[in-house]
Image 1 (cartoon, rainbow, N blue to C red):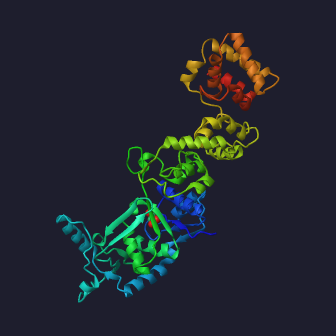
Image 2 (image 1 turned 135 degrees about the horizontal axis):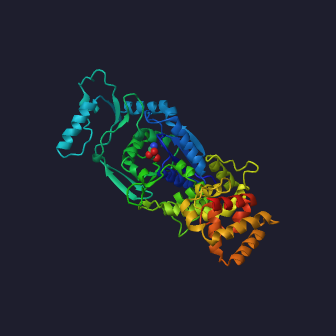
Image 3 (image 1 turned 135 degrees about the vertical axis):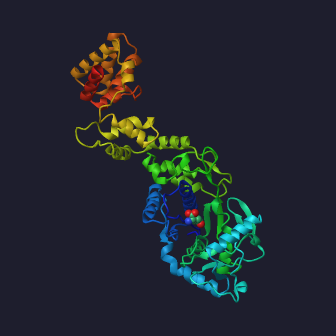
Length: 473
Ligand code: GLU
């Protein structure tokens, strides 16, 4: 049975796709999928000054990267201007909307007066038809169209997240639904779209709670008093660690920035699903589980707190289980930005072997690439490290090891391990006393995975070259 659930995400293309919008998209997607319904992408591009084509592309790329596939769209509001005009004409003809010729200066003065009197600034209805009678519209002012908000009564809805919300119409003024150039405003276009697209559940950030009563009045004006409305659910904000709304100050907020920073899409997806929703104590789960489990009852009313360490942990977990060829290719593209082509014959070991050795030790692809780089470019070992570790009798042991390495019959891990043991015995050293200087010499780091495994991958020639270079430094 196909379900009638229809959800949407309606981002404005004015920059990046914000983490909060991505989270709303993910909840809307999961809710639709859970009910076997449809998820729709609509680009709200009526703010002509701020909308750009690049930002549209960023939205599409971000959705694709996160795997939030939509069933319909992307619809664009700028393609629907004639439709909005048609509805506005109808509301004008029915007396539910009216032209307002108030100039910006007039409205500024009105606001200043109201503020001075300690009142909430609001439009005073001066161009409502009954008050406009006999007034001559001023020359050169293209009127905006205002919606005639009911004077009395109240609007209420049972919010899917926040529970019942009531607003008295007396609190609302006559909002602008079309600007002087005829382009509709958000609160109007969103209603026409949600009606035309048959949206049944509107999920969005709770910065829109104040818009919803206005939109409900517009629904009723268009569809009639008893019209069936969609259900509304307003998601609480995402807060930074300091309790303030998540913003650039707290780090990356753009979805594609996470891609660049070395996160896997499934890790960010999983993380976003847990930002304000939970299923028992499940922390790590995939798309299928989310679709199976998702419900609005477990969306948290309280704001969610962004925690980069949890995201890094999840990413590390997903790195451990990702297919090696995929990790290799994601790492290869990062190495290329450092001028390293790991696929070139003779350049170094196979990248999938390198990522397999390191992936349990890193939390991002960028860290993985940093580690992998060691296999393709000799390190610049820090002078302090050399001074601290490549000194005294250890130097002789490294010399001996380099010599033995050159002569060894096999460069398999087990053979390398044997050679290391022989050096330990010969020089009376304990493993760390030799292994740490050796690590420093070949990698410029005091910690690596098992040294024999590292050296096997690095190859005999590079190992000997690097040990000798460290001794000569
Ligand atoms: N364009 C609006 C936004 O990005 C959409 C809000 C809504 O979902 O109604 O906030």
